[in-house]
View 1 (tube, rainbow, N blue to C red):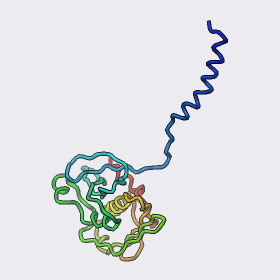
View 2: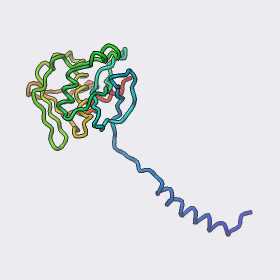
View 3: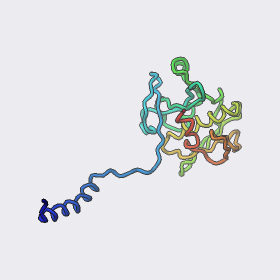
View 4: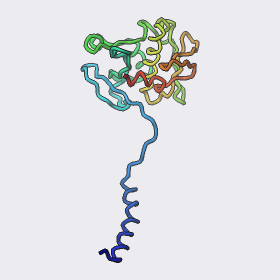
Length: 196
């Protein structure tokens, strides 16, 4: 049989319990975060990690054929100091080792050049590529745009990307089949980043 004397003690414990759990709780981060799987160019294994912020490595997105569809995988490269250097690394395509050992490819046509590039204070990156970029077939062009957007979006100062060809804006086809002439983000290409 329980005594009434223990009731005030239990009541006091119940009153104090929320204070202890609140002090020990972890706050929930409700913002979204892109997750990438970088592939170290010297190995064939991949390690899941959050979008990189390390100054000693940069990330470019290349194609990893999976037998059914192409998916974009993050590949580590030497650090770059500017978004233009990062894009130049991507436009150079996979290294010989990445092509032969890891079977990585690119959907970006060979020889594409950057005509101009600017980044505003709101994180809008405007990239103007030469007309050679449109040489890709339509299905490859979707993936090529995804490679560019995903790669430059690894930079913390880039939030959205407007892609021009020879100074003209155009509507881009997204993996969903929809078209948009709005600024793009890596979320627009999430289905390519996650793979099947």
